[in-house]
Amino acid sequence: MPPSNALPEYDYLLAGGGAAGLSLAYHIAQEPRLAGKRVLIIEPEAKDQNDRTWSYWSDTPMVFDGIAAHEWRHIAFRSPGFEKVIDLGNYRYRMIRGLDYYQFIRRALADNPQVTFVRGAVEILEDTASGVRVQSSAGAFTAQYAFDSRPRT
Image (cartoon, rainbow, N blue to C red):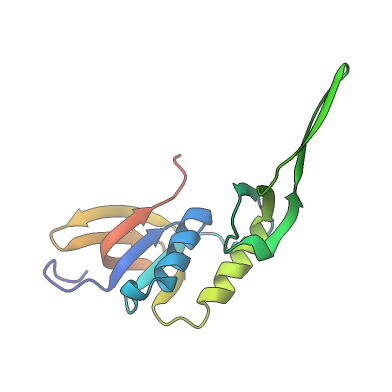
C-alpha cells in the first residue's frame, strides 16, 4: 500500500463498469477540460453478453442513437373497448441492447491512454487523507475521487 501522502495513482476510480460507470468514463474521456485525467474502471464481469436493455426518450440527437436496436415514433393505448395511436412528434423512444452499449463504449475508449480497465471485484472502498483507496480482487489502487455504481446487495 502506498503511503497516505503519495499522489493518487488515478484521478478517478469507477467501481462498476455497467451503464453508469461506462457512461461516466466515456463522458470524462470526451471532455476537453478533463484531458489527461487518469480513469480506472474496476468491473468483476466481462460484459460480453447481452444481459439487459436500456430505453430512453429524446427529442434531439443523442450520442447512443446509432446503436439503438429499436426506435418508436408512435405509442398505442389499447384495451377491449378503446384504441388510440399517438404520434410522438419530434420525440423518439429508443431501446439499446446491453451488449451493443458495452461494445460501443469499449471501442470508444480502446485507444485512450487515460482509461484503464481492470477485471476484479471491489472488496473495500475507503476514504484516505489524499483521496480514496480500493482493495479489489485485482489488487489495491488509489485515486483522488471514486464513483461507486455497484448494485446494492
